Length: 271
Ligand code: MF3
Ligand code: CO
Ligand code: CO
Image (cartoon, rainbow, N blue to C red; front, side):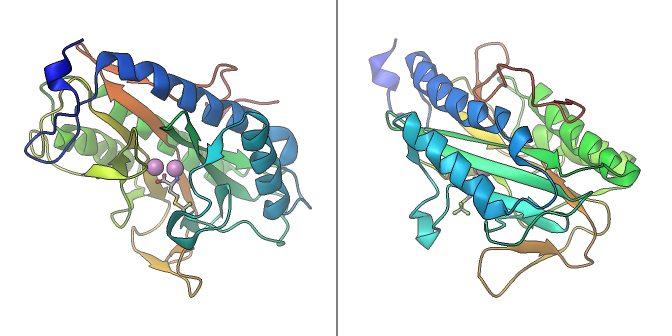
C-alpha cells in the first residue's frame, strides 16, 4: 500500500483509492446487492411500492447498516422505485403495481462508511415482449460499458460503448442523468455519462471507484421532472429501464462491488 497516494485526486478531481479500500466497497456492495436479490418475491400485481421500500429499510436495519438515501437532499425513502415510464428517482408510495408493470429498484447503503449503490429491473406479473427487449438491451449496455473499464481507457470509451450498443437497437440513452464517483461519499466526480466519443474525457486509473447506471428509453431520450421535484419521466411517456453497478478500476481491468451472489442480476432470471 502506498500511503503517499492515499486520498490523491486527479486533475479532474477524481479520488484515487487504495487497493485495500476495495474490501469496504465489496462489503457495502454485497449488502446492496443482497437486498436486491430478495426483491422478486415482493414484486407482484397489487403490491405497493411503499411496501417494497419498507422491506428494504428493514433489511438495511437488520444488517446494522444505514440507508444513504434517507435524508439525502431531503429524500425520505430507502430506495427509488421507478415504474414504466419513470426514468429514475421514483418515490415509493401507496400506488399499487399492475400486471405487466416493469420497475427499477435502486438501493444505496452505507456500511462502515463505504457506499454501495446498485439497481436492477423487475416485473410485476407477465413481462411483455417489448419490455423484455428494453430490459435486455439496457442490461447488456451496462455490461458493454463495464467491459470498457481498464487503465488507459477513458470515460468517453465507456459512454461510447453504451450509446453505440443502445442505438444499434433503435433505443435511446438518457442524457439528463449519469453515473458518479462514489466510495466514502455518495456522489463525487466524475459525472459518468452514458454516451460519448471514444478517447474523450478523463483517463481511467486503478483506484477509481464509480457507478455506471445507464437509463434507456424505448422512445426519445428527453426527460422531465414532476412537481414532487424527484420523479423523472420520459417526455414522450415511452418505457424506460435502468441497471446500475458500483465498480472499481483495477491494474488490469475492473472489479464489480455489487455483483449478485445468487446470480439474480440478469433480467432473464426467473424465481
Ligand atoms: N441511487 C441513486 C443513484 O444511483 C441516487 C438516489 S438519490 C435519492 O445515484 F435521493 F433519490 F434517493
Ligand atoms: Co443508485
Ligand atoms: Co448511482
